[in-house]
Structures are given as C-alpha cells and as structure tokens.
Image (cartoon, rainbow, N blue to C red; front, side, top):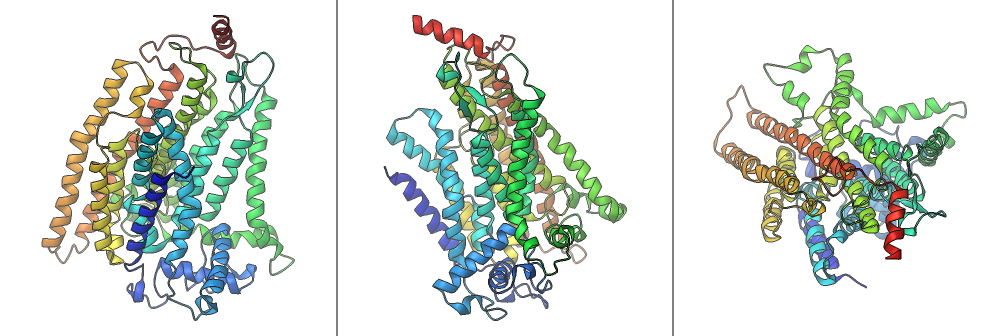
Length: 584
C-alpha cells in the first residue's frame, strides 16, 4: 500500500532541496578567488567525475593534485565514475570533458543520491521507532510523516549538500542503515524454548549486513570514522552476549569476532583491491600502492583544524591561550587522540554493556509481557546506538585532529532520528549546528537560503507540536520518580538552555550587522561564533551521555524502575512463566 503522507513528505523535502539548489554553490564564478584552483567543493566533486571517467584507475589519486585532487576513499571514486558515466549519457560528452568541462550544473545528482541512500533509511528507522506507539493506521502515518519531515528539512544537511554542495547524505544514509541492521536480532529456535523466547544468535545475518553497510559508508567518506568507536563497542558487546545463565564460551566469542572481522576485511578488500590489481608497476607492493592513497585521505599535515571550527582546539588556540603555538606540531596529533579517547570512553563502555546485555536478559517483571518486551528492547538498542554514535562523533568533532565545520553533520544525523524521544534537544542542536556554520555559508553567498531554511524549521517545530517536555521514554516505565527526573531534565533544557542559547544567537547576528570590528580584530565575530557554538556542543556532549545512560539503566533494571533491586528473569524463568500462562 502506498503511504501517501510519506510520499508527500518526500516531495516537499525534494522541493526544498530544489529551491536551495537555485542559490550559489561553493566557489561559484570563482568567488573564493583562488589563483591555483577554481571554485570549491562543487568543482572538486565535478572534477572527480571527470578524472575517474577518463583516466585509468591507477591515476585517480595522483592526477594533478594541485587542482582538486581526489582525497576521498575509494567508494567516492567509484561513485564519481558512475555519475560521470550518467552525465556523459544523459547530458553529453562535454559535461565530463577532461580539463574543459569546468562549471557544469550537477545539482540533480545530489537529489538522486538522497533518494537512493538517505530517504529510504530515514524512513525505515523512523517507522521502526514509531511502530511502538501503537496508534491507528491513519494517525500512525500522519505522525510518522511529521517526524520524517523534521529529519529531512534539517537546515544543516540541506544547506551543505544542496547549497554549498557535497554528497554527505550518502555516507550518513549508509551509516543509519547499518545502525538499523546491527540492532536487529537473528533468532534461533531450539527445543525447550518457546518461539517468543527464541535464542538470539548475537552476530548473525543482520549484524553482517550492518557491518557491510558501515564499511561502505566509511569508504564513501573517511569522517564516518567518528562513528566507529560506538559501532565497535556495541558489536563487541554482542559477541560477549550470553543467552542463558551460563557464560558464553571463549570459542564462541572468538567465532563471533571472527565473523565480523572477516566481513569487514572482505568489504575493504572488495573496495581497495582494484587499485592494487591495476597498479602502474607490477613490482609495487601493497604498501607502495595504498600508502599514497591513505596520505591523500588523511592529510595530517593540514594541522589541528581548518578555518574557524567550533571545537576545543580552535577555542584553545585563541589568545591569550594560543595552545597551537605553545605545543610542538609533532605532539598535537597524539594529544588530540588522547583527549578524543577520554571523551568517547563513557559512550563505548555503555554501548559495550548494552550489546552484552541484549534484550534477552529480562522480561517485563510486572506484566510478564515477553514478546512485546523483547520488541521494545530491540528499539532501545537502536536508540542506544544512535545516541552512542552521536556521542562519539561529537567527541571527535570537539577534540580530534583535522576537524572541519561540516563535520557537525555526523552527530546531527543520528540525533535527528530521536525526534520523538528528545524533541527539544534534537531541534535545538539542529539549529545550533546550522548557526555554527554561518560564516561558511556566508562565504558561499547562501545567506538567504540559510535564513529561509532556519525559519522554515522553526515554523515546523511549533506547528508540529514537538516542543513539549514529555518524551516517548516516559511511557516505557511506571516509575513516577523516573518520569519526574526525565521531564525535569527536558524542562531545564527548554526553559533555561534554549532561551539563553536562542537569545545569544539572535543577538550576535544583529550585532554583526550593526557593529564593525576593530582593525586589529577583524575576525571578532567569527571568534564569538566559535566560542558560543563550542560551549553549546560541550553541553550537547553531556546531554547525549545522559540520554544513553537512561537507556542503559532501563534495559539493565527493567521497566519497573521503582524496583531497581528486583531480580531480572532468565530464559528458563521466562519459559516457566510462559508455560503457566498457557495452562491457565
């Protein structure tokens, strides 16, 4: 059955993207004024279509590095070749003529990839998360469409991909799809177990599909590494999961880890081996072939950060601290790595424990509703992985090496899926993320698109009625104290953090219009944007950790949060309950 409200939502989202695409792209008419390389990301992506379509595979990463040389992983290169082929077929050979085709219009390709990779996985995840609401069909589709619309009109992704011009939606869609499959369970039904209590094959077909999708996302854009600690911790926890009172054997754990390892290695070999097979010199070793590509993908020589990015290192590099000048360049990468590891550690620990616990460790102690409890906890695991991915990616953004403003899209993507669980936090972070990139979009002359998209998103927030402090998490527990604590946290964000944050953002925009910075401080307002945004993202880090901790506690202690000390039920005990209910 065709879901008309959802199709209408997708159509409206495409219309918004089309309108934004009418504005200038990065470097249009050489607005950046570079003497060595025309344009910006738009020209880079188009040039990659040109070189991959015309040159041999062993020249893709070495051809004319001074003019937007290819510096994304192999799947982007293959994708550029495919788009170049489509352009040659449907537009004409002149659209990909080597060295002569600069400046051709490519907006359609981003919307095409949105429809293929991003829209479907957003729909799948949002439908899965909303299915637990139990509404009637008509109300369900209406609410689902409202939620999906909120994700698809997020200003940041729309402006960056369809205004500035990039293909971020591909890797974000693949990553979201991987989270969906990783948190689905593969059931094995054995004798002695009721079908509703099937044993869980922790690393089965779904986990393999999820791992493949994640590897593909990582091979599209290297920044997907920001999610990798969350994914690794959760899947490792699943390998240690025990389905009964007995502990899992070491051999079983190693087998599960081996399955995941073989999946990852096979996917990477499939992506990378062609470059070795078609190498220029048959005497080249794999290291000789791959090392130059890796250096292109990870340019550590560029420094701690690019431009005015709202992270800790950029703030600490401001006067009078000037940390970048005080610390030797050779020590900066390991320091950034150390701080990043400290910030991602809490998320990884919680995700490992959640993966280890699974949804089979307990059932609802009050209602004894076994099957529905398992279904809810599967969604809890998806939510946990989304919060964890948002947490590790915001940690990388704040503390890691070589960060760009656009990397804020990585925590924003999984957070956007939590529009029903944390509507206030989700909407606030979406607007702050766009605000933090103001000077980037201003350079591209996207000011009109910026204000229109932000105002449209604000109108959506109030019209959709997603400004209340009650969340879907409240319905998962009968604990009055838990609900009060959760709602107090949401109320604090909505009544304190958001008014202060919104006032600052509006005031700084107004001041920038009417006040001219002093001659010795020409970058005064960009610096103010960086400081305010960085403080906001630090608060977001704490909020993400708190949300993940809440899910962990609910899964660990069950729906009866008032009785934290009550024992959980094993499979054997749950089977007895199920048998008694059948006799009754």
